[in-house]
Image 1: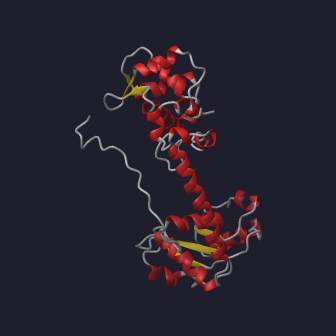
Image 2 (image 1 turned 90 degrees about the vertical axis):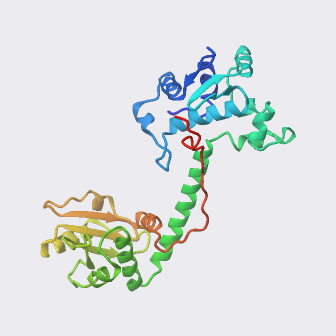
Length: 302
């Protein structure tokens, strides 16, 4: 299990007890060994996929210790203990956490709390996750809520509108060349089990067949529907198909694998909504928040 960032504070400070300069990456690797972080855990990323979770937690443990004045970074990527930090280690604390650090005015200023306002409840609010984890957790919750609302909206659409939505989404994802070309293809074949076709690329080197089911949530698509679609593809000599539904697929449907070379991609309601969000179909931007960091290249640091 990956330790939380507060559990890393004291071990990190203890690594600096020799008063020497330490490279951040070396500290991370040493702490990974100390906490017996597995190879799989070392690969775990934040939801955004931009940083390893363990790296992020060590970085925030370092930031909080710096803001409390217990350590400092004389230059990029280097950490060294301060006299205040050495004094803390001499006390042999059992742990260092947010509650411990709130005794330092500089730390309270950093977290925007006044000494008289630093109640246990307020401190508790900032102890559970690193800022990135909190921000990304909030983002994922907002995104999940939006996806649910979006899916409910889609389910209530008339069939013709849903067909246009599917076409627009596939084009935004890189299929079909243009809305005009894709629009002529969808619903054109009229073959049983096939709702339409779309070009795989702008040149139309291959054709992908589409089945779209605008079903209510709870009305699952089973294996027979998939087999029927595969049979329809075989009748057209086709090898690629996309089956889209606003509901879900049964386990048997997911497990079904055609015996021939036919390749089927299943897209159920939740993923459909997520793809719509990713490609800005039926959604608009409400707010944009930018997270910035120091540009060390500007300052000429290597």
